[in-house]
Amino acid sequence: MIRLADVSRTKDLGSRLASVLRPGDLIVLTGPLGAGKTALVQGIGAGLGVRGNVVSPTFVIARVHPGRLPLVHVDAYRLRSLAEVDDLDLDVDVSDAVTAVEWGAGLVEQLADARLVIALERAADSDERIARLEPHGGDWAERLAGLQKIEE
Image (tube, rainbow, N blue to C red):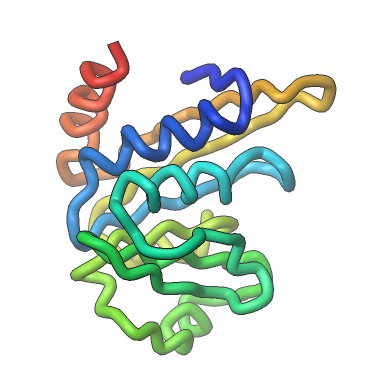
């Protein structure tokens, strides 16, 4: 569990996380509205050196942000199946990019053999957020241990 005092700390976590990301990585973000999912992806984008602003893809469903490592940012809130995700016809091969999916739990896990699930919570009476990073397969646990060394 990581306590994040405010939205800037949420972005900082994303930027630090970017240091351990590789092409083909899948990040699934969960949490209620206002929990900080997009802010975390903004930090990841900054850490990956993407060009342009990273904004919520709520109305376009997916955006590809070019950078030293492309970032595919998906809002799966209105999607009902993996087939709909496949139908997005993204301009980049997800094996060459980092893919961050908001609202993707139970929907996009099949996009990669391994993934990182980040559960975000926000107290109703505070700007503080809680992030839980849950590795699933691959070498995520080792990479997250490296991330903790960066945080110290």
